Length: 133
Image 1 (tube, rainbow, N blue to C red):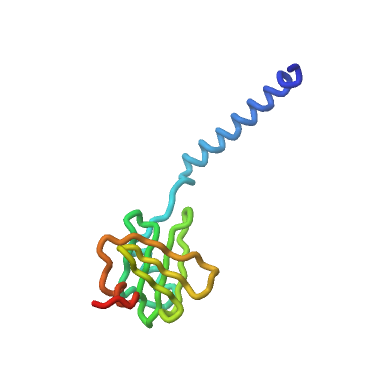
Image 2: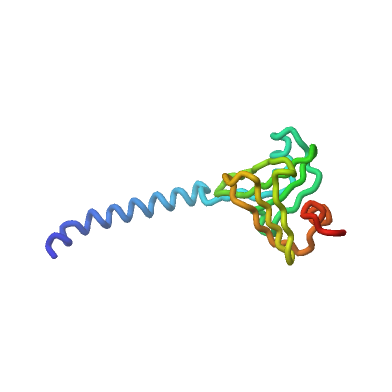
């Protein structure tokens, strides 16, 4: 018990410093997260030398599936305060659309698949998924 009493001020001081650092981080805006919109998708497409032909963004603005010019497809997703995007030819992407849920998988396994719920899937996605019109 005497040892705990002797160490209590060190523990309290450490906890106070950690709370102070968390407070400073919150004031500086480190909790800000990125959000996908049409402008961000256009910027990502331009970085690939392409233009956005069609795009669908989830309701939270954290995932997007995009058809680019030149027959390419792009998945973009928010990861923390940044955006990760993967572009691939349409032939290297497996697309399924079931009961309003879109699933997109790339041929390489290095990028996680995209799963999005869609209220009314656009016709271009249904065509990519091979569904009849």
